[in-house]
Image (cartoon, rainbow, N blue to C red):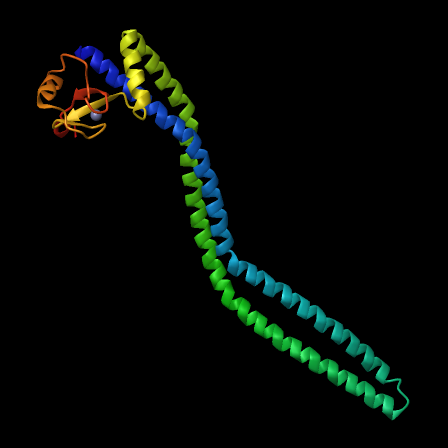
Length: 239
Ligand SMILES: [Zn+2]
C-alpha cells in the first residue's frame, strides 16, 4: 500500500505541474505583451525632453529662415535706394528697411531664448538617454527570461505527460479512477498530506484514530471532510 500511495503522490505531482504549465502557457504571452506596452509608455515619457528639444530646433530653423527672407528683402531695398529719385519715396524705403531690421532683431532675440532653452534641455536629454539605455537593457533581459520560460513550457508539458502516463500504468485502474474522481471535485488535488492531524487540503481535523492509521500508511484513507486521499507527512522534517 505504501508503494501505491507513493505512486499516487507522484501522480499528483505530475498533475499539479501540468496545471501550472497550462496556466503558464496562457499567462506568459500575456505578461510579455504587458511588458512591451509598459516599456513603450515608459520610453514615451522619458523621451519627452527630446521631443521638446526637437520642437525648439524646428522653431529655431524656422526663425532663421524668416531672418534670411527679411535680409534678402532688405538688401534688395538697399539696391533700389540708389536709384530712387524723389525724397518721399526715399524716406518710405528707409522706413521699410528700419521696420525689417527691427523685425529681424526681434527674431534674433527669440532665437537666443530658444537656444538657451535648448541648452538647458541638452543635459536632461543626455540623462534621459542614459536612463533609457539602462531600462532598455533591463527590458531585453526580462523579456528574454519570459520568452525562454515560455519556450520551455511545451517540452516540460511533454516530459510531465510522459512521466504521468508511466506512473498511471503502474497503478490499478480503480485506484486511478478514485483519484481522478476526487481530484475533479477538489480543484485538481486528489492526494494531500496530513500533518498534526490536519488535512492540508481542507484544513479540517482528522479524527485521532484515523490520524494514527494515516501515520502507519497501511491503507489508502480519505479525508472525512474533503474526501481527498490522505498521507502523512512530517512537515518539520521535510521543511
Ligand atoms: Zn480534507
